Amino acid sequence: MIVLSILFGLFALTAGQTCRNLPLYARCSTNPDCGCLPFSSVDDQSGICAYLHLNPTKLRACNEYNYYCDQPYTVCVHHPSLATKKPLCYPTGMASLDICPPLDHSWTSSETTTTTTTITTTVTSISVEELCANVSWSQVGKTVAGSNFTGNATNQLRNPTAILFDSKTDTLYVADTTNARIVTWHIDADYGMLVAGGNGNGNRSNQFEWISSMVLNPADGSLIVCDARNRRIVRWYPGVIDGEILAHNIYCSGLALDKQGFLYMTEFENQRVTRWTLESNLKFDSIVAGNNGKGNRLDQLYGPMNIFVDENQTLFISDNSNNRIVKWPKGATEGILVGNIRYPKGIRVTSSGNVYAIDSYYSRVIRWTPNDVNGTVIIGEKQYTLSQPTDLDFDANGNIYVCLYGKNRVEKFNLDKNECL
Image 1 (spheres, one colour):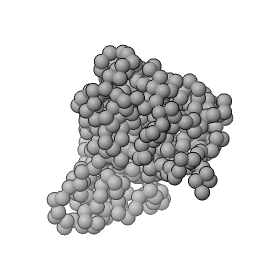
Image 2 (cartoon, helix red, strand yellow):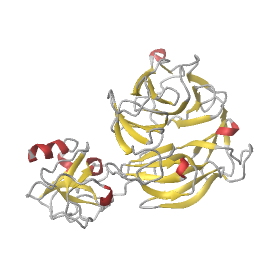
Image 3 (cartoon, one colour):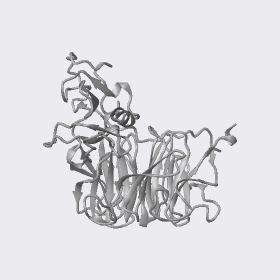
Image 4 (cartoon, helix red, strand yellow):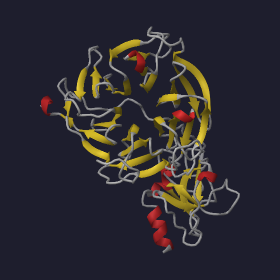
């Protein structure tokens, strides 16, 4: 039973992420923040090479008799930072090769190299396959999260507000806001999996009040969340039962993360976008857009919502109450008009420079190319195709996912290349 339990917990790991014959918590990766966490059920110094600085007090204890973890994608280990000797259910996602690259592709205790690897976030531009000017998407969506009925069951959503798609794992993250939780849906899954919240609305560290935006930090697998009505920014590591509050007294309506690891935050009430350093704590860096009062000048914002940052640290902002999309190049003192749109919300920008945004008033998705300020409706030309859309994202194949607040689900619209042939 013990052997089966360990095998079940390790199904998400590869041989390169395990470590053997190393001293307890010894360095096992070019990342100095990683160490060998020993499995609780074996005596041969086997373990996983994992990130050491995850707060152990936020992890669930595993069964001390059979070393079983009832959480998916976790494995029972000992952790060096915990005073008690109780074994913990550690998320296998924190033992990925992206986080803990191997030492010269080997796991030997005689390794003496002092080379370190700086972990940065992935490039934020989306690799959408835009083959020609006539490329289009299906006009009938397929439900990929939620169902025809609202509720709090694992196959249901209630007023989802934000989504993001992790192409590395083919996982869709959904902010199930009225259910005060974040859930993940894998491709073709019938049910979602709880990853944050799920304890009712409130202001405790394991609760949300209104999730307006979220980003996934690939450097450590954590979710950074705008808990808007609680006026705070919260970080949730994989497998933990409580979030970590990073900032207070900010009504945040949008988040973005650049490849250098800077976090960009839309401050809805302050009519500005600010930049923060995101490490063990959140530290204010600078004001990067707005902050000139409420208004419609190009150096002003009015009710800014979602944001996107590209490889050049250019910001694209859904300037909601001004009914426009604006971009702010790095260091600019005013924005540049991308296009007009009624009450824009979710926004994404592709590597080719095309801008996609949610027109929440007319319930449709609009695209602007670098040479088209008028924009083109790509989804939602027919009335009622979408119902109160709030956010969108792409997968690696260019398919579009749209978060439908009014239908309590997320729908996928497949890329159609036929017109390009």
